[in-house]
Figure 1 (spheres, helix red, strand yellow):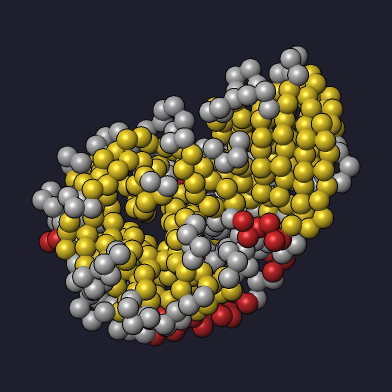
Figure 2 (cartoon, rainbow, N blue to C red):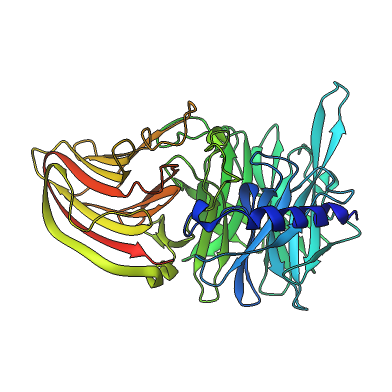
Amino acid sequence: MDSTILQKARAYEAEQGAAIPAGQRPAYHLTPYVGWMNDPNGFSFYQGQYHLFYQYYPYDTVWGPMHWGHAVSRDLLHWEYLPAALAPDAPCDQNGCFSGSAAQLPDGRQLLMYTGVVWEKQPDGKTRDIQTQCVAVGDGLNYEKLPQNPVLTARDLPEGFSRFDFRDPKIWQEPDGSYSAVAVGQSETEGGAALLFHSPDGFRWEYTSLLDASRGEYGVMWECPDFFELDGKQILMAGPMEMQVRDEYHNGHCVIALMGSYDSETHRFTREKVQLMDEGIDFYATQTTLAPDGRRIMTAWMQSWAASGAKPQGCRWFGQTICPRELHLKDGRLYQTPVRELDAAHGPKVRHENALIEGETQLEGIGGRVIDLTAEITPEENCHAVTLKLAADEKHFTTLTYEPRSAKLTLDRTYAGGLYQDIVHTRSCKIRTPGKTLKLRVLLDYNSVEVFINEGEQTMTACIYTPRDAEGILFEADGKARVTVEQYTLNL
């Protein structure tokens, strides 16, 4: 192992990351120490705190040879950077340490399972990624790669599956102490697929079964799978690539949850329904972990590949994760709510009960950029639209517009500022359970807006790069509406 590659990355991030002022980062969303971030990896609870690794290229704010960045937190809101955990410094991963996950071994060590990438020149002269699965073991700070890596290769795949698209293992420990992992693969007949593997010890692996596949319906390839039980149902999550635009599906890269049942004897997953996990602009590459109190907590990359080239000038980091969300199953649907740890950050409350909105209205005490705001919106009969304007000043704003007659909510960051490239700025979603009143919970940070609709039945997520001092929040109604609004400034 050429450890100098890892040591170089650690020295660089220690110097350059520490030089980025806290005032240039979000208040409670994790960003890379320096440089580029995409998929969250290894989300786990280990040695009394949450560990979150991430796809990382410290040397620039564009994608490059993938390392694993590393951060820890006790409350999922305040993050401490640790030195980079992995670098592309072994024969099995010399061109990148791609996404993966973490589990604890019986001896107390932490096991990282990840995708190693090696470039191979093809007969046509093109270079392709050969993707295999590798493991590393460590103490929560330093990790040693297994000498016999890789532990899974194309030889372990079912017939017809590609050695170029085999990645993103999500590992967990079974009740009997053995380990399972789900990874994604691709074949001409199945398209993108979730493949199950098993190991007695976390080091020796074999293929078990094909759980589910896209088969031309949900993208051409899947990424970042997850597989877990929740409230009596089995959930398979995946990120389709090149998703066909239809119904609520708009983003080429999105996240779906396939819900159904799982027979642990036959290793057969039976799909019953499919749900889109976010209907905004910037949401991909989810990963979950089980908290010590039994909650299933999800994180994700709060960005989209389509907009990943659009970034503020001069910013020395790019990419961030969502505020972690708790998952619940209700009436056959996955609900998402911000982790309850956020409640401890609530400052003084400002509340307006049943306020009349007619034209543009600013409610006293409502405003700010690091806030947790709930609005219950009740349009009157003559009202065609109600708009919530966020992060506003004289030039900039982001809007949420509710049109009750069509039961449509639109998120629009066209005038948020900071980005001038021709990227998607608007997304709309159909409210699944429209009623007399629409309830929104909005988490606002310096670089993002996260919207939870009707107690988290639907969500919309987007990055914004509005000047930090744009703190105005206003309501506007085409007609008349009543709103009950409650806001907490977050003390972080």
